[in-house]
Length: 241
Image (tube, rainbow, N blue to C red; front, side, top):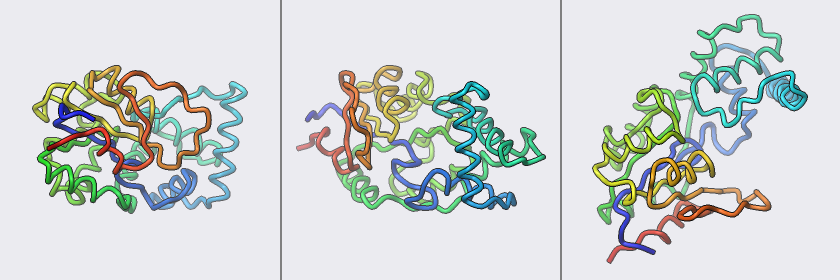
C-alpha cells in the first residue's frame, strides 16, 4: 500500500455500471437494436454474431480488435446488421446506434457507491475516462454528480482520442490537477484500461477489474498493474492515515 495516490479514475461501462443489467453482450445489442426500431430478436442477433465471428475467423471479414473507437464500434454494428440482411447499412444509422447506447437503462454495481463514498470522505479526487459517446455525459453527471465534477469526466468522443492512447490519459491528469504517477486507473479491460494507463499514461497504478474472475491462465502482469475482482479491493492499494 502507498500514500502517494491522490487521484483515482475509473472506466464507466462494466466498471462502475452495467447497461441493462447482468446480461450477455448479445442481449445488450438486441436491446439497442430494438430501441432504435430494428425489431430483431435475441436468437436472431445471437446467430448473426455467431456468423460474424465465423467470418472473421475465416478471413472473410476484417477483425476489428477491441472495438474502442466510434468507427470500430459502428463498423461492428454494420457487419452484424449485414448478417441480419438489414438493407439500410449507412454510417448515419450505425453512428446513431453508437449514440443511442448511452440511453439504454443502466444500474450501478453494488460496490460502486460504497467505494466512491469512501474515496470522497478521504479527500481522494475521482474522475472517469470512458471511450463513449458525448451523450453519456448527462447520464454520468446525474448518476454520480455528487462524486465526480463535470470537468473530471473525460469522454473519447469529446476529446477525439480513445483509450489506450497517451493523450486521453494525460488530458485527464491535467484536468484533475495531478501528475500521472499520483493517479490510479481502474477498468474492466486489462489492456485498454490497466496496462494502457500505466504504459501509455504513466499512471502510478493500473487496476484490472476482473469481476467474474473467469479468465484462466491469467498472463503475467507488467509492473504496477494488478488484478482485482471487486471495486472495494481498490482500497488495498491506497493508504491514508
